[in-house]
Every structure is written in structure tokens, then in C-alpha cells.
Length: 409
Image 1 (cartoon, one colour):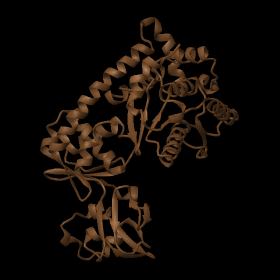
Image 2 (tube, helix red, strand yellow; image 1 turned 90 degrees about the vertical axis):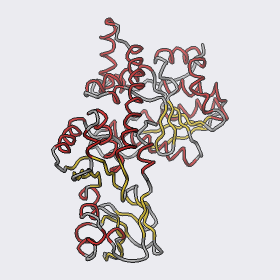
Image 3 (cartoon, one colour; image 1 turned 180 degrees about the vertical axis):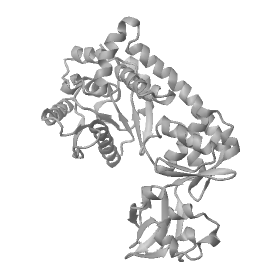
Image 4 (spheres, one colour; image 1 turned 60 degrees about the horizontal axis):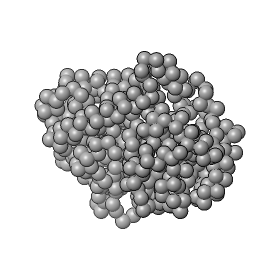
């Protein structure tokens, strides 16, 4: 039994490059490992396993993956995550830690594409979990087949294949896999969704149907993103690193498109992983309509007569610092001869030292969050506030980046 005909078209775009495969030891990822070897050949595949250190058996499972890789003649690495502090959302932190480790692993090995073993069942369960949270089109469109993040392309070639088909494939090969006991732990939302699917099956609501619904919503999402991109192209400017939006045109937009333009501006400025929650975003839209400035998502939304500006909120970055040879706030490059300096937000204390700042024509709120140069606690330059010489600040992203990044990757 071979599933290659079902996924070969999804693997074909990456032929000719070294392929990373994320392998936990479970049936889905082990099947993906075997399928990748069948399609690309073992020499083109590198496998990676992240041991989160949360279960005693995890280390043994990682070693099992290594033994399977040895048999397949596939290079395999084990990475260990030690980021759990005992506080917060464990699953979310583990996921972020896993992707961060694999990203670094891939980059150091020149790997541009990493395959992930998500299945049709995962897609259906994701749909149900997001439905329970009240997600809109974007959330209900589920997991994309490919996405680019931090310079790595993450691909899910098995979204049309069921979990059971993968286990049947492994059993036919006599291949080994392990079942994670947390897959039966009903304290996790995904396990609850998995059990609910069984209850819904008599109504014809099964993994196949929900996955197809998610795929249909992905098409709707793309259409909305294209309309959002067109609105942003016509109504926004990037000035001094901030997003400036023409109010009259913005307020004439359909509510869904206006919300998307605003959400994208907030994420783009704050560098957040996710857009604000719907209730908070709706409240911000209402404030803009009432000519009221507000704060959200680490940003200030400053409403003015003809436009509104999305800029950094000072409180969110007042303690953010970096060296003179680094990118500050993931948005600014500070250029000068002396690298033995600290870059941080100018802030009220710094602005008070810039006696001529009003001559720049810039507003106080914008200058408070602008990058400035300090040495041994002394302000030596605030280029945007007209203070100091020999220093420049340049945003590393521009209007083209803002508009092009609206489309999902």
C-alpha cells in the first residue's frame, strides 16, 4: 500500500533541495518520514525530533526515531526544549519552542523547507476548536498547506489523508510508531474535539466534511485578503515607520475589510504573532468612528482630523534595548560609527533633552517611541527628534512590505 500518489503533487515543488521532516515518533510524522524517503530518496531528507522533556518516555521515543532513521539512512537530530517555566499555556509555549528550535536547526543546515505531519483529522479538529472560540473566516479556514515564517517554508502535504490511512500504511510496511498517551487526555481541547467528531459522525459531520469546509473557507479568506490588500494600497502610507490611514476612505470600507486593514496595521507595527481578538478589534473600530484615540496590541491608534496613525505604544517598548549593531524592535536600524551604545525608545526623559524637537514637525507621541542612542546612561543622539549628529535611523520595512504581507504565506 502506498499513499505517494495522494501526496506526490504536494511534495513535487520541493524536489532538488534538502528536505527537513519534523518527526515526533507518532504515526502521522513517522508515515511522513517514510513517504518523504520514498519520494525524494533518503539522501535528500533530514529528520528532526524535539524532546520537550515533559514526559519520561519522550527521550526514549526520540531515540526510537533515531534508530528508524539509521535504518532508512536518514540523518537525524534530537533537539531539547527547556523553556517551560510551569506558568502559562503549556501547549502554546511548547509549540512555539518547538518551531523556534526547528527553525534554528533548519537554518544552520541550509534547509529551506520543513515538512509537518498534520492530517485531515487535525484539520477537522482545528476547525471545531476554532469554531468553539467564535473564530471568523480566517480561523475556520484551518491550517494552510504551506506558510513561510522566519525564512522557513513549512509544508503540510498530508492534509487530505486521514490518520487511519497513515497507520494502515505503516502497518503494511511493518513500520514502527508510538502513540502519545496525551492523545487520550481530555484536559486538552484537541482530544475533546476528536471525541466530539465521533458523536457528530451520524449526522454526516465527519473529518472529511469539516476538512473540505475549511478548504472552502481558505478560498474565501484569500478573496478577502486580496480586497484588504487593495484597500491598504489605496488608503495607507508608511511615514517614519508608522502606518497612516486615510480616515474618510477607511470609514467607507465594509466592516470586515476595515477590521482587516486595522488588524494588519496593528500586527505589522507590534510584530505580534496573532491579530487582536474580535471584541477588542471591534471596540477599536468604534473608537476610530467616534474620533477617539485608543491603545491596542502594544500600539497606539492616534485619531486625527483626516487620518489615524498606528504607532508603537511607549509602555510596550520602554524597556526594550539592543546594541548599536542590532535591529531595534525588529523594525529599526540605527546607523553610526560607534557600536558601543544602547538603542532604546527615546521616552519622556530623552525627549526633554531634545530642546528643538518641535521644529521637526513630528508629534510628541511619535517621538517618544522613536529609536535613540545612549551611552553610559547619557543620550547622545535622537535623529528623529533632531538631536545629535552623525547618526541615522532607517526603518527596515516599507510600504511595499506592508501591503504585500497582507496575503497569507
